Length: 220
View (spheres, rainbow, N blue to C red):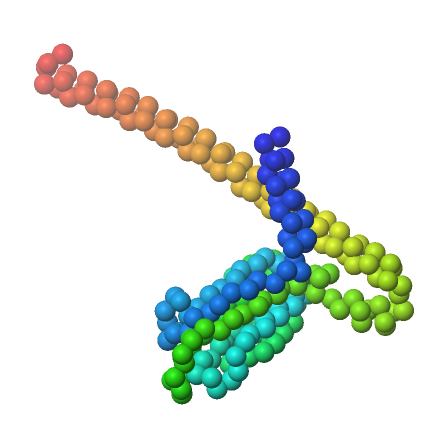
């Protein structure tokens, strides 16, 4: 029963992510040398294996304005999905994930030194669509000649299927963690038994050794 609130919390978090998935993240990037923390920022998200992901970045400014904004998309395992350089305007990157792992969308704003920059900032609007949200449903509706209601129902069906897949993944992780916990408890129990046995054996050996020593000295 203790795991139920945690599971409900994860489900609620997933539903909230699906609900706000269409809202873009907006922020300003300060330009710098590229090695300082102010000129680099990463946004992390989790994605399941073989999931369609569309990363859309809308950047103000233009090329040659004294700043170079680079973007790098990679996951925690080491797979790289895109590394566009000197982006301005709209930049869209589409990829299919290779593993169940978090991925990072990193931006780096570098001063090129080609001209003086009075306001060394780039405004970025980032939108990350995953799974059903990443598909072009207008094109699917036109290709398969679906009615608007049928298109919406199909989109909801895929979103529900993604929630079910995520729940199965969480259940499998919970099973692995439980097995690891039980295995650790068993090893700790046997380690405790072995340690106790060794201490008792050492205590008995010390008593026998001291008795033999005192007898050899005719003290007892």
